[in-house]
Image (cartoon, rainbow, N blue to C red; front, side, top):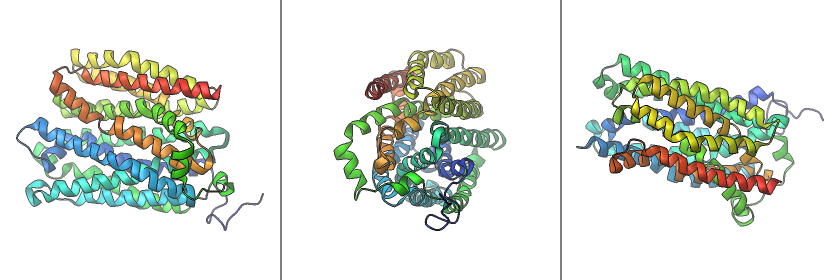
Length: 424
């Protein structure tokens, strides 16, 4: 078949896999840059936008706002996922990154509470809601795009969704290490925390340009879109949604607990702020490598089996690694714990996107992956730092976050066993 240079863009129909990966993951980079900065600098952002007499209350409000944005994710998944399944992967990817840029701009430009009072937290909440809506559809659109362009390397191609997250973790952690060690507390609160947001915002225009140059996937071009994909999904494929949701539970819970580690290191272990960032830097590198290895391996063997074994590892090692950090609070123990959990997560999450995509046909793939993932991340991911902070405050047990991780691992194990049985 001759290359198509007119119907779907200015490039030939068969883009290189490298170009496809860059185009799909650039939005993921912007998304996670914004979310990771918010999570890693939660203590500082709490002081800037949500001051309260009790530091724990201030932090809870900050994480509550972080979690609030996740309530918008299912709506964004339904709207943008439906748009993607009707108008194409390229169209959905372009829309989601444009909306992300607006939310990130608000984070960069909004003055603190001391300057504009209650308007400051109100604007930050609006920015978080807009971010939640836009990224709700991003994951499903990007996974559909990667899988449909991936051919026989679907697992490897889709694994870049989590590998790119690991790369972003490294960059944000470097910002954290430099800013928390080189700036005074007042400088960090006054302007230092905004620097990584400004850097992340620069990704937006580049992402829009790159995505404007890619071509549509052949699978979508040959499919016959439904008039309302979200309606078809909910009426005809509820079991697939439930199973995909369940499979993603421990992936989301583990990542957002890892996102909580810098705060955990400061507030619970009373370590220097740079400790959490150093551990996160190592963890990001491990997540990048093992996500790609997991995705590559899944193209050669049974995907659910890989995820079953790594879910078991989450279940049996969550408590010991938190115990290690509490019993021996240091840079070394934090690095080991975060490194190990990211290794297990890489093996699990590197396979997850391709496995989720295989639960849905082309006509509902973007909205199916986006909607099931967004429900999971809203319930089990976005509020994980809030629940971790609350559990420690209520129980006085610094190990309590590990029980949350173990419970989510059990839920995912059940879903994976059902998926494997259905595919047998």
